[in-house]
Length: 226
Image (cartoon, rainbow, N blue to C red; front, top):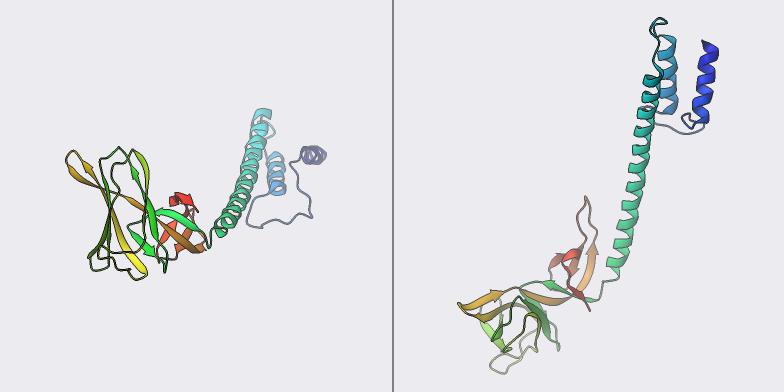
């Protein structure tokens, strides 16, 4: 019986089911060597009048091989996920200092610059109006953009109020509405903002872009990069 068991161990090792003694292993995990010892112990202690069927023996080896394969596959996926996250971080870091177009009702007017953005129109409209308000809700300017076809309609505010005076640099509230059959209809606005920094995501969450206007948005919400 010992000779048979030794021959069995050698055969299994030649098939890749053995493990070299030099390989490091976790003492709390069942490895290939431990599985082989259990199999040999099972053969030594089986009822000689009811020996294990060849089919049962092969089935046990197949099950162990399948579990080992799944473990290796999981490790490969973990490495792939880490690699993809590193590539995504590299791409996101290249956005720092650039302008992105994101959904927002707040825009920043830089000193000597303009506040710009767009409205995605689901249908054509006879008139598109952009309203700019300060933090107190006072209307500073309304931009009448006239008839617009369905699609993206860009707007830009130069910082001049309805009184012809320049507004102070800072954050302003932006709203958009179109003239519809049932009256004015509010639409979502997208504004352009500079990226100050990037926050890495974890636990499956997307990375976050920290914008110069104080807002933070997910990388996936970026509509355009300038």
